[in-house]
Amino acid sequence: MNKITRTGVTICRLLVGVIFVFSGFVKAIDPLGSTYKIVDYFDAFGVGFLEPMALYAGALQNAVELAIGLCLIIGVRMKITAWALMLFMLFYTVLTFFLAIFNPVSDCGCFGDAIKLTNWETFFKNLILLALTLIIFSVRNKYRRLAGAAQEWLYVLLFIVGSLALSLHCYKHLPPLDFMEYHVGQHLPTAMSVPDDAPRDEYSTVLIYAKDGKEQEFSETDFPWQDTTWVFVDSRSELVKKGYTPPVHNFSIVHHLNGDITDEVLAAEYAFLLVAPKLEKLNQPDLEASKNIAALAKERGYTFLGLTASTQGYAGEFCSNHMLNFEFCSTDETTLKSMVRSNLGLMLLHRGIVVGKWSNFDIPSAEAFGENLLASNLNMLRLSGENAATNAFICAGIAVLLLLLLGCRRKTAKW
Image 1 (cartoon, one colour):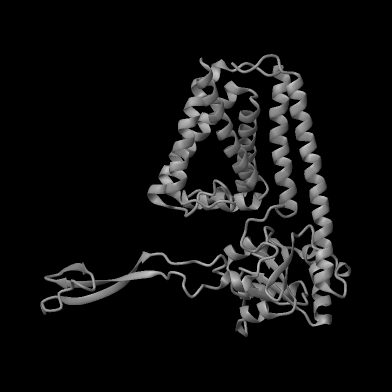
Image 2: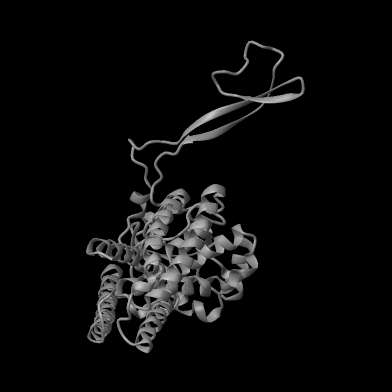
């Protein structure tokens, strides 16, 4: 094989590897996001009974995807990696073709929430990746081992275990990179607004008339207005062109007595929002820290509300049974899952700006909030950021060390 061909194959291998690493990583740091998407797939294909397995299936898929990408970049276990890559791409190319045709889910979730593609865009992307995969697969027997078989398998194992550990960490806490619309720093009123010059949805009206027992559809310009033998039956509107959709477009807070109080909450000096999509999955210990913060908020005149997608009747009983010192309001379940990736999470707003988010495992004690909530929270964010940076530095150091060890053990170059 000449030098130009080898260079071309190497470029294909690295390109596919980088895409797989990026795709696997952005989903591994958001395991609940992957879970929600897999549940959508289960529901679309009529296998909703598999929902309890969604979290594990998502974490395993992300680990395999990340491991394939890393193996491609480094050149480890290339024969088996090429087979795994080919099977992976064949399966998902067929799946995304089905999604593009029948559209059972609006977004395949191949890049998590970092990059959203339509089903047709995903299918064409997979066609390109499949073509590159065929090139890599065709030369799978020409690769030579970079180290001993045991050492190479050790790296593969470390890639998978590392990915699973990352997903576990982000499941207990929150994703270190938040690609959702409700990220820290987002000004919700601005994100919910539609610019005056933004394109609007365009609709056409379909008119249905009947004649001699048969119905026929007409547009507004060609309906038989002069022929009295046609009888008007019905009409409907159809979306012709989608207009501008603001980043935050489905956020509302409905109080069981006062109705929609969204604007009041966004205008509040400070508002604590306890996010609980499903109250049925919570228990008393989960709520203790929240009750203390609710008491602090009441003492200082701040807003503290629970948000749930459970019915208002159940929410009322839940508050009584657990003797809560705050109320639960209604919010769309999908919105709640986007706000905080935790079935019990806490969000702090300052005049409509998201200034803090915590998972159930990280909700601070009431004492952690000083007299100035904004200053206290910024200090907590600084400390968590320093810890995250330290953890990232350690992980990067381990990765570099592994690569150096692998480089030192190289027996021969590829080919």
